[in-house]
Image (tube, rainbow, N blue to C red; front, side, top):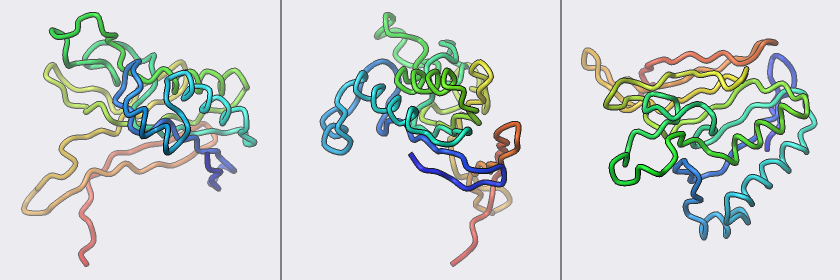
Length: 184
């Protein structure tokens, strides 16, 4: 958790569970236990909710590797599963993180102004189309910034995918850009 100074006043940035591969299973529990003291999804949800309860600002922004549960289970939904459908048809199709969704719901219940959720992991390009850059989780903008490939060549110029964020009183503004990195 970090407090940011922004043009619209202080905003608390809450960072979700690292190393998430999405879905209901906790991945890398030994690593997460050593580094963060969490080894289960329940412990992760409790830790994120404790952080949310400690927020002193009105505005909050979530940053996570994978997005929250609750944005749909179609392959073209922001964090919908488009893989292993034949191997494991019983696995959930909404591959969002339940612990992150629980923390977002708590923040909403505490009356926090949630500016947005920034996440990636689930590549936007899928076999049947493309996942959206931005989706709405009951009034909360959720960005999926996982653009692959992240680097492309146009007219012999190497361009890198970049997401520019801005804040307004209403919320988060995000624009995708392809930028050339400065040399040297």
